[in-house]
Length: 135
Length: 135
Length: 135
Length: 135
Image 1 (cartoon, rainbow over the protein chains, first blue to last red):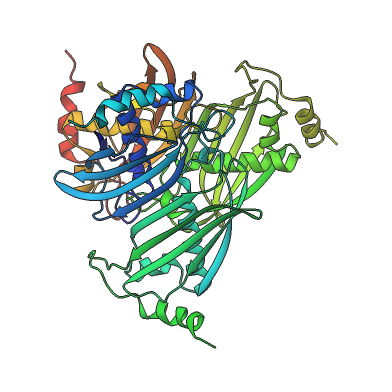
Image 2 (image 1 turned 120 degrees about the horizontal axis):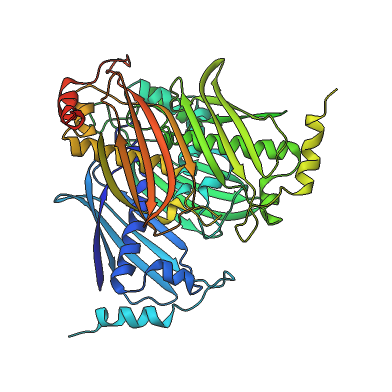
C-alpha cells in the first residue's frame, strides 16, 4: 500500500453562502493529494504528462460527513491499495484535526497522447513495486 | 418521477490542460440541474433557503464515460425517482447531442437554520406529490 | 463598435460565505460574454483556436459596485470599441435588471501555436470591419 | 509598509486548455496572500468576520506578464503601503523563481453585518500601526 497525506488550508473562494466549503472543492483536494502521492513515489504527475501519459478520471465518489469552512486546516490522506494496472484506484480521507470530515475514492485510466488506453509507464510500476512487496 | 433537463454551454475556464472539461465541473452542472428541477416543481431553491431550509450534499458519485470540451452544449437530465423524505436522492445524465458522456447521483439531507436534520417543507412535498401519483 | 449581451444565472457554487457572488467569478462572466461577442461576429473562439490563434489575457480590471447573489439573472454587456490589431480591448458591464452592478475591461494579445505574438486572423478583421464603418 | 509572501503550488484544476493557469485563479492567489498578510499582523481574516467586520472587494486589477502552468511553485508578495482607513489598498506580485509573472492590486471597504461601510476595527489599526512608524 502507498499512503501520503497533504495539508490544505481552505480558501475563502471555496466557501459558499451556506457558510461551508462548497462540495465541489473536495474533488480538487483529492486531486492535490494524488499529485503529492505521485511525488512521494518519485514520479510526479507533471513528468507523467511529459512522457506522454495522461490519467483522466473514470469515477469519483464523495461522502460528506462533517462540513468544513474558511481557514480550516485539512489533512487529506490518499491511499493506493493495489499496484496500478491499466487502471489506478485511490482512496481519500479528509480530516480536520482528529475529525474525519469526508471520504472518497477515484478511478483513473492511463491513456496515451492519442487518447487510447494504455499500460502504465514501466518506471511508475518500478517505483510503486517496493510498497507492495510482502514481508 | 420528476424529471427536468437543462442546457450548459461549457466555459473556457472549465477546461484543463488535458483539453477537456475538468472533472470537478460536473458537480456544478449537477447542481445547476437540481436548481432547475426545483424551479419546475414550483419551489425554487432560493425560496427554500429563505424559508429556513438548506439541502447540503451527503454524497456525490460521478462516472465519466466520454470527455467534453470548451463550447460543447451539454444537456443535463436530472431525475427524482422517489418522493423526498428526510433525504433527497437525485440521478443525473449528461448528454452531448445523443451521446451519453457522464452519469451521476447525489444524496441530500434537509437541515434547518441551526444545522439540525429536519423534515422537508410541507409545500415542497405538496408540489412533488402529483408527479408520484399512480394512474 | 461591436456590442453583445448575454445572460448569466448565478450558480450556488459561485457564492461565498459572505452570501454574495465571489468576486473571482466575474472574470468568468466576462469571458462568457467575450465568447458570445465572437459568436455574433461569426468567428467563434473555438474556431480561432482550431486555426492556430490564441487570445490570452494581458490585463483584467474589475470594479464592484453592487453585489449579486445566488440565482440572480445577470446581463453582461460586452463592447469592442476599436478594430482589433495585435491587441483586443474589451469593455464589460454587468446588470441585474436596470442596476449596474459591475464594470470591467480586458486586454488580449493574439499569439500563434508557438506562443509568439501575431496579427489577428484576416477573417476576423473582415468580420469586424462592417461594425466600424462610418456612415 | 506591511509585506508578506506566501507560496502557491498550482493545481491541475487551475489550468485551462491553453495549457496555462487560467487567468481567473490569480484573483484567488491574491486573496490567499491577503489572508496571510492579516495572519502576520496578528488579526486573521476569520477573526475579523467573527467580530462583525467584512472586507468585500471594490476593485481588482491584474496584469499578466508571463504565464504559469501546472505544478509551478509561485511566490505571491502582498504589500499594504498605507494604513487602512475606511478602505484598504493592497498590491501583489507573483513570482516563479526570480521571474515576475503577474502583478495586481485590490481595493476593499470595511462593512459591518448590516452591509454598511464602517471604520476598520481598532485592534486592526493598532496591529498595523508599528509597521508604519517612521524611524
